[in-house]
Image (tube, rainbow, N blue to C red; front, side, top):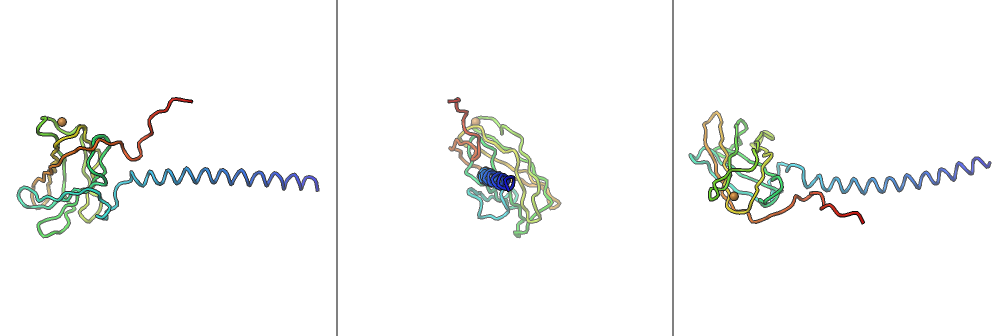
Length: 176
Ligand SMILES: [Cu+2]
């Protein structure tokens, strides 16, 4: 009898402990999920883009749409995609795309070497490693090579935002 009571009591403590652990864990997890959601590459739906520019290539071969999750800003890696179509609006999935960019007025290029790679079969390409290191007038050019030919698209825009990434670590606080 006595051992049964002890067991019951320890079970109760165990349950409480587990409940607390689960609550704490789920709290952490939901924080983590929310953060990962912010940083995850965009899904292919267009409506998720907060900033987008559309441009026809120099020789009119392609139409490219640059879609980014946030306004361009100085600091964090930019969460952007490129959608590529031909003159008839059909998705192009066989393009080899390279990026060049910089600030013509300052005479410098991009601070990083971003990479463009095919994301799906609907003409969506992901852009990795794109970063801007100062505010002002920027150009971002895409050299596009396909079986239909070669052409380039150049986007021109201003950056005035200096932001930290949505999920950046908080500044280091001194221990209290
Ligand atoms: Cu500059």
